[in-house]
Each structure stands twice: as C-alpha cells, then as structure tokens.
Image (cartoon, rainbow, N blue to C red):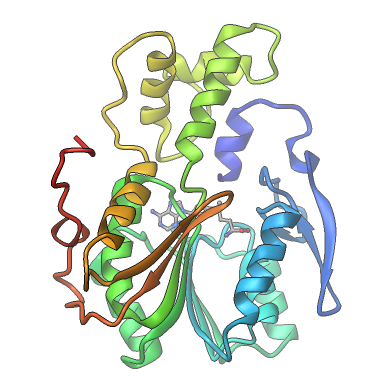
Length: 295
Ligand SMILES: C[S@@+](CC[C@H](N)C(=O)[O-])C[C@H]1O[C@@H](n2cnc3c(N)ncnc32)[C@H](O)[C@@H]1O
C-alpha cells in the first residue's frame, strides 16, 4: 500500500500504527506494515513475521541475482541487500521520485555496484522491464523475483509473464499481498456497516468515488465498496485470480510452474526445467482452464 492510499484511509496516526524498530547487520530499520509517511528512517512495509520469512528464504541463496518491484520508502531494498548479499539486486518503482534515505544507505554500504534502482518504471511496461533486466544481468538467469508493487491483477500478470521465463530452474517468484483485494473488501464492508468504525470515513469516500488517494486501484475499490452493499460485482479481476491460475499451471506437466505455495504474506512460485520463450510466454496458454473454474 502506498502512503497516499493509506492517508486516504484517514486513520489516525497511521505513520506509527503497528510500526516497530528492527535491527539487522547493525542497521536500524522501521517495520511499518501499514506503511508510514517518510520519516528519514529505512521504512519496510512489512510485519516482523514476514521479514523473518524473507530472512529464511534469502538465506537459501548464494549471492543471488534478484529483481524486486516496489521500492516505496526503500527499506526492503536495503534490508534484502544485507540479508541476501546479492550478486546484484535490481529494483524498480513506478514513482519517479528517488528515496534519499535509500541512496544514502547504498552509498554508506558501498553497494552502488550491486544494487541498482530504476525509478519511474511501471511493472506493466514489459518491454522496458525486459530491457532493464537483460541489460542488468547480461542475459544470466534470475534466482529470485519479489513483486511487492501494484498488487493489481493485470500489472502483476504482465511482469510475471515477462520475468518468470527469465528465472533459472529452481528459481523462485514471490507475489506479495496476493489476497489484498479480500482484505480491502473486508475493511470497506466493516467501514460501511458501522459509522463508528475507524475505516468509515475512508469507506464512505471510496464508495462515493472521492478521497485523496491516487492509488491505481481506486476505481476498483469504489466498485468493491458498491459490491459490499449488494451492487454489481467489481469488473476488475482480483489478484487472487493469478494465484488460482498458478495452481492450475502447477497441475500441467512441463508448464514452467513446478510448485506454488500460497499463504500469509505471499504466493511463491518455483520454476521448473521447461524452457519458456521470454517475451511470448503466456500463463493462460500454460494453464488452460479446462473446467471453467476461473470464469
Ligand atoms: C507496498 S509498496 C512496496 C513496499 C516495499 N517493498 C517494502 O516492503 O518496504 C508498493 C510500491 O509499489 C509501487 N507501485 C505501484 N504500482 C506500481 C507499478 N505499476 N509498477 C511499479 N511500482 C508500482 C508504489 O509506488 C509503492 O511504492
């Protein structure tokens, strides 16, 4: 979630809600699972339990080649660069504005040759994404992709189809917050049902199509709000659909998808040995919906 989106929720003291300090490698981070306004700290938009799961995941790789999508306040890029000791970590972010605290961290830790940032880059711009990755890694396969960017179905699918073929066999692709649409729906329903609920103002503004948010999913959230009141179901496909497609793909031999793990925090996909044509590979071709379960 981005700061504008969270600010639009109009909850009090959002910047510190659930936030806590966290030290790793002698560096202080601030874990703020609900986001938080810029504070001069290395803010990681994750709870402690998720950070611990990332530590377990990253320890399994030896000098990995990593792509991370969604820089936000810069904390996760900094933390992962310490935890993973990557050969290279390339991060992209839609916002064009640099995050000074991350630039300072990279300079202080002399990581400039290994951690490269690409601001103003849309994860759905697959031509640009592929060009960045191919140039940065000189055609070498990726070990790990972490998508913590838009959390929107079309954008997430676009970058998945661009980058999953570029993973090595056994490489892993993490899609964070894969169930966020369901969480948003629950918050909206709670806020609309109870005028005293802390999310009421945000929910009412969202239903009315108002609010200060520039969040890309704002229109869809208005539709979700209407749906909680019995209106038509939102026309936007929720991100959970992608997890369902990936499970279907794992049922097909040689689909590229060896294994799918869904649960709290993320859906994680492990790449199999099947050669996939970067640029033209499409998940829907790999995972035919034989029984119309995704209709
Ligand atoms: C949840 S935050 C990332 C949090 C960060 N990874 C962390 O753990 O601290 C999501 C970020 O993705 C960015 N974003 C949203 N849509 C995007 C898109 N289409 N392409 C790239 N980045 C996007 C937002 O601007 C925001 O900074």
